[in-house]
Image 1 (cartoon, one colour):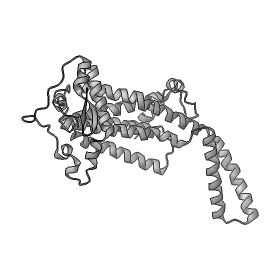
Image 2: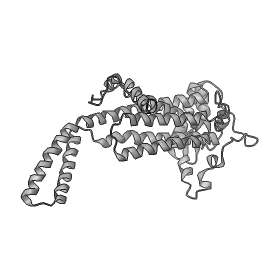
Image 3: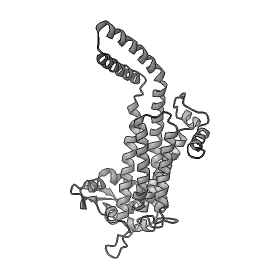
Image 4: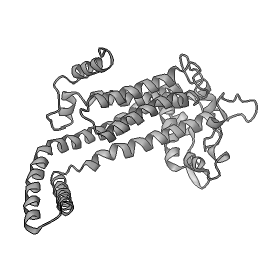
Length: 333
């Protein structure tokens, strides 16, 4: 069933529920409802403190509404409790969207790595040519250097175009993964705080009883801090795995690594003040990211994805990773 709201046609939840074989939800009561024990800054719309209302615009945007429809559809179709629906939605999105993009990213990076010997040979030859021309024409060191850099940039670009592996293509994963993460997070926050843009839903009431184990209320923060700390630990593991497989990182890469570590730690107190539904999604997403990172180190999986082999590949990646981790964090004196 479709309903018109604010000039838009939206699919109502009862239609999805009837399709799944169980009765529609009761309307949200306007009085007497239990409010989630969230901090004011985590519940109130940003427009209340920010005159620009940028968050309110984001929360009401079409991508967020699509994310809400995805979550509602999974919940209605599978018949799972909300914690299970969030988990299934995260695994499905990661498996169908980010895993193929991550494999493509590794494919591009492997091709770029295999081109490095050719690029180094070209650089050596070009350096000699520029030195000869500078001697003949009396170029200054600055002019010679600029000539070398300009021609080197052109030649490298031609090589990347020739092999269809420009490094910028490896950033596609980031441009897709981050927006999906943001839209899903905002959609779950809308559900948890009753800020959905569809009338007649009792999603907050369902979330209040849709948790499990130590977090039965998905609209309230995790008072045990188990979910927030787990999110921070898994994110730190992802950062450390990346750092361990990079030998001789540049100063910029080192700074970025420290920055991401700091963000991972900062996420713990932030997650502790957020609804458990949101933090559960973050935990599932981070766990899938860690699993994806480990899977893409497998020689068999890389071969299945037709990722070219490189000199830096290992036949025993997990053994090497454990040895590097042990050497860095356990056996160091």
